Amino acid sequence: MNHQPNYRQLPAPCIIETGMLVNKEDMKRLINDLTQVRYLHSIDGVIQNQGQGWILEVFNDPNQATVVVNNSLYINVQSFDYLQLNQVSPQETHFDLVQDNRILKLIPFVNTSQEQQVSKNLGFDSLEEMLGEVFSAKWDVQLDEDF
Image (cartoon, rainbow, N blue to C red):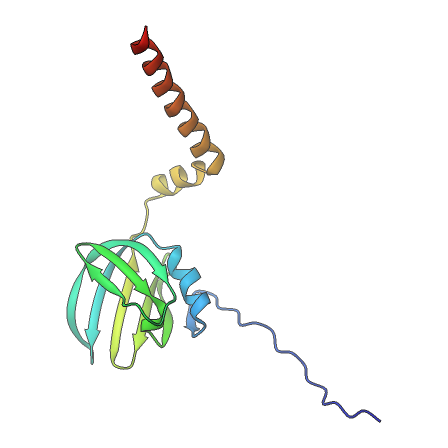
């Protein structure tokens, strides 16, 4: 008789607005959606640096550093133990990247409703169409210059 334990696989975690992420790929995916942020870097609760910048790269590599310089953020999720999500208002969530007594708090810039509407309307198809028009116009200018 085969006696195998009856293990029930637990469902994957579900985080809604607040919670903690420890899986590096989950952290990477979430931070990848951010673009422009304010950041606060603190050690033992004392702010060391603060500023604003653009998240240019999010990666998962144990051999590279997280770098914040010249308004550019290159974030390696391997630099942090976990990501804590804190909802501070219905429209705003802060992202705390935590490593021991160090916290890199990312505060996304909140878009105005008009900017949100524009970004919703600029889907892949719209961008592709605009690029096609730009290239077409450039080719027309080049053809006109050749004659």
